[in-house]
Every structure is written in structure tokens, then in C-alpha cells.
Image 1 (cartoon, rainbow over the protein chains, first blue to last red):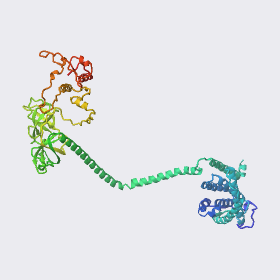
Image 2 (cartoon, helix red, strand yellow):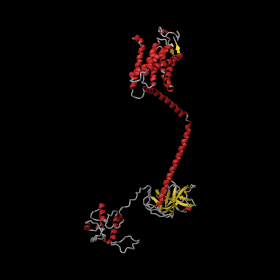
Image 3 (cartoon, rainbow over the protein chains, first blue to last red):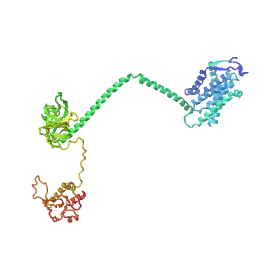
Image 4 (cartoon, each protein chain N blue to C red):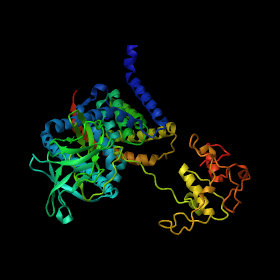
Length: 178
Length: 421
């Protein structure tokens, strides 16, 4: 099976390829994504729509296909993002934990090497991330932020486009093992 | 159970992680302090490491500075030692200046008090020849200095001028063996001759064996040598050894007790003074300022013994018995319009006052053989305005005693009705 196979669904888990990454990649890539999220919007405000930590969590979850690993990566990245933002600790942490878990779980069922599938998953998880964050803001913090679903859908498309390109770049860093 | 955990391992871990983050979120949201937990944790974790690193950095720097770069310490020690020595010299110089200032002030006060005419001079050199005890002062014949003039300080005599130059004079100290001066003891007025011994002490020769002189007695200049005016302190007796026919008296010169002086006085015209019985006091005595003048002139005239102004009640006479007697005599003279002491010899007094009218207290007269019996009390003179007390008890008193004297006696604890002179 090649990465550019025509099927999107896997008949069994054995068809899926487990990607492994070096330790420094699993640490450095989320760290760079966090720095991007913090500093790039300060100089290029039009890039503030990008949610780079989320894309990295989605990618690592999809490619590693291990729910525990995915949720731990999501929790770590989310808590770090909370620490560097003004949010209470856990808002991004819980959201990205779920994203990492679900991404790893879906990665076992789908052919995540497909570009269209990556685009769809990135779009879906972006909208899920924003929606769940809004729910937590209302439910836990009683904050009245607007429910901007059209905006999220638009930004989800943009993030999915960037995510598809980013995933292609990150594929160069993985160590393939069957 | 194990199979259950394996089956639901993923969802279990997910729930645990989410629950832990919910707890964290709840605690952070409830935090009413304005310091975020992540910052508190970070500071708590990083601070010990930072302290450790700072301690290591400081220790390394101090080690390098204190032990490796010690090559500067020796140079700094030399500089500090030089500064310390310089400051010690400065302190000594300032102390000497202070001592000179105090000596100059004492010299000035002594110069103002002594009746002799003196000239201040500074000692600028001592004798080079060690066999002679001489000083050189910065005053000479230009300033009126002549040979054989006395040189003194407030503490006593120093020596005499033995050579005079235009601007410099040589002073032979009293400790020189060639020095001699007439002295007299303060207590018994025993005469002797002061001589130098070449040491810091002097001796007094020619004090007769019968004359009583004790250690600690003071000797003064007698004026017999025609150099030193009489009454200047010379020194105190240190020791006395019996001898025939004269005693061997060792004297410690008072002016040389603190070493050679820096400033001296040259006696240009000496005035003899009395020999004091008590040794000169070295301690300063507090002298209170004079009292302010009295406001009413009558008080001044009464205190001076003059007649009070008409209509002014007489003030009580206080003071010694002599003051009271003087006031009584003054009153008698005033009653006869006679001014006592008006002329140099009393030539303007036409007639003397009649002092026989002064009443006499019989208790004050001497009792015994040869004593004059008390005369009968004369009749009281007619009262004059302004000279008698308005007290009615005055006329009943046997002797006519001034009311002022009676009040003074009463104030001093004497008998109330009897005046005493």
C-alpha cells in the first residue's frame, strides 16, 4: 500500500501504517507551533487565524494512531498554550486532549495519508475544537462569547488548507515502520 | 479485571486526563489572586535552581576576585598604610596646634592679669650645646628685650635672658647649672637660692636648718635677685634631706612640668606681688556673670550707705557687721547734713559728725576689769522725716536702734527687739 492510495477507509487496522517520530521531533514541532501561535500574530496580524498547535496535535494523533499518546500530546500542547495565554489552565488542555484522542482513534479507521482526508479531518477537528471551546467557556467559565459558526467554518477551511500543506511537510520527519 | 482495563484503557486514560484538567481548571478559575498558577509553579520550581546558579556564579566571581586577583592586595595595603601614616601625622599635627592654641590663650590671660609689663615670645629653637640648657625666642633688642630680663609662663618662671640679638634672645633655663634666683617659700617665707642641676629638677640652697619646709610646699620668687618680680611661682618641693647648716631641697619647676614651653613671656618691667599662701590653682574656676543693675536708685544708695530719698522707707541693711556699722555711721552723718569722704582729706567738712549719739548695746561692750560701764541711754531724738521707721515699738526700745539693723538681725536669727552693732 502506498501513501497515495485511492481508498479512504481501511479494511482492518493492519492496513494502517504506524508512523514513528524521533523524540526531538515530538518535542520540537509542538514547541515551534506554540511559538508561532504566540509571536507570529504579533508581527503578522492576518496570520492570527491559524491554529498551529491544533494542526500539530491533529497530525501527531492521526499519524501515531495511539489514542493514549494522542491525548497526552494534546493535553501537553493544550496546557502549554493555556500557560502562555490568559486562559485558565485546562481550557485548551481539555479541548486538545479530546482532539488528540479522537484524531488517533479516527486515524486507525481512515487512510490518513490521503490529502483529501487530511483536509477534511483538519477542517472537522478545527470546527470541533472551536465549538467545544465555546461550550466550555459557557459551561465552565460563564463567558458570553459569540457562537460564530460561519466564521469557524471559513477559518476551518483556511486551517485545513494550511494543515494539508503542513502535514505534507511533517511527513518528511517521520520514521516509517510497519 | 485486567481484561477490562485493557479493553477500556484508552477511554480510562482520557477520562483521567480530562478530570485532572477539570480540577486544574476549577482551581485556577477559583483563584482570587492575580498570580497565575502556572507562574507560581514555574517560580517555585525555577527559584531554587536560580538561587543555586546565582550562588555558584557569585561564588565563582568572588573566588576569582578574592583569591586569584590578590596581586592587587599588596599594592592596596601599601597605599592604605601610607594613607594611615599620613593621617596619624595629621592628627599629631592638629593635636599640637590645639595645644599651642590653648597655651597661647592661657598666656594671653596671664599677660592681662599680671601687673608686670610683659612681652610674648615664641620659642623657635633649643640650645644645640647639650651642656647648657638654653632656649631661643623670637624677640630681641628691637622689641625692647635686655639681658637679665625674666622669662616666665603662667605656670611659673622659665629662666632669664642671657644674650640679646636684634631679633632673637637666648634664654638660660632654670634647670641649667649656671642659673640662680632668689626664692621664698609660700608657707613659712623661708628664703633660699634656686639653682639648676642640669636635670629636670632644681635645688634650693641656703635654706636654714631651722626654717620649716615640707615636701609639697611651693616656692616663689623673692625678688631679691632684681631679675624676677616677687611672687611668681617657681615650683613645688619634691624632697628634703637634712643637712648642716643648710637643707638639701629638691624642687620640681612648675613651668617645666609639661616639658619645654612653646610660648613664653619676657618681663619688661617687673612688678612685685605678695607671696600667696595657697599654691596657685591650676583648675579653671567658673566665674558667674555680674548681676544686672537694680532698677530703683534708692536701693543703690542704701547699699552704698547713702541717705535714701525723702519719703522712701529705709531698706534693711544686710551684710557683714562692718556693713551694718558703716550704715549706722553714715546715717548719723546724714542726719547732720555732713558728707563723709567728700574731699580728699575731708577738708570740706566744717565739723565732724557727733558719733557719740550712736546708741551702744551694753551687751556688746567688753565685760571685766577696765571695761567702761554702759552709759545711760540718751533720750530718743525727735523723729525726722525719712530717717526713722514708723514702727511704734522703736520708741520703747532702750537703745535707739535703726529699724534696718533690727530687721537684719531678725533675718539672721538674732534677738528681735535688741539691735546689735
